[in-house]
Image (cartoon, rainbow, N blue to C red; front, side):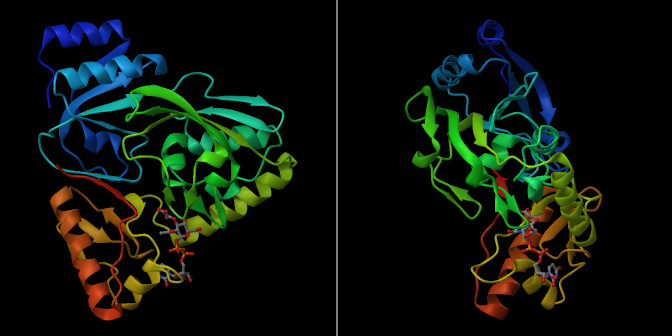
Length: 302
Ligand code: EPU
């Protein structure tokens, strides 16, 4: 979608929002898939309510983009604009065991920064790509830990109330790859309470997790991490692997040879290819095990 109205463009400037016309979302997602639309880069949280009122008043549909690492975007000209927060410097402020982190901060860098200040707990998340906001919304987890366990407060834009609010940790429920945030809530910042641990010890944990990840996941390839959630008590990756589906492909969309729940873009895969492959694997798993796998990847198609 294109913002061609010069009045809207001028108002965006007043709100300190940068308009980047004709952005290819394939360049902003780890899968390297996605069509074209206008990107709005937000420099001040406080401008968000006015920005969204402006978009609503002009019937401009929008979506919020985090780090683009768990996302499959449709092909072609997209029917909505994309909003993204510009990461501020510094992204993390420490106060004792509390880390106040901007949602646009990179997750891995945040884990490392806290580690250097002897704050641990998040070692398992070190290799999870994306922003802190994205991790928060999905309750990202790996190697026995989930980010939700450390959340004490969240600053967010509540679309339903048209305003910025602060929620305390006990007002939010965190489950496996699921949170109680509304789909149109926009994460802005989070306060984490992290356990004290010597840097050396945290580093050891980080090294172990990195090694496990390197040996089991296709890290050098374009992917969105795991495509499906694990069904209760089972591993989607193992189920797909046991059906002999590693290497199955539609165009350049391909089930990874290394981890069967990672689907990679081996060249110029389209969203259409990837969606077809996802539907095909889901169907085969349903037939063989009677289980319908749920998407873990977020799909923006239409
Ligand atoms: N396995 C296979 N074949 C495969 C993949 C896995 O046999 O192709 C087996 C493994 O050998 C292991 C079991 O299945 O015995 C579980 O595999 P793994 O340890 O890789 O964990 P997972 O359940 O497949 C989950 C998360 C990952 C996270 C890892 C490590 C989900 C959907 N996936 O994977 O998260 O990194 O544990 O904690 O919960 C993500 O969310 O995108 C993601 C990659």
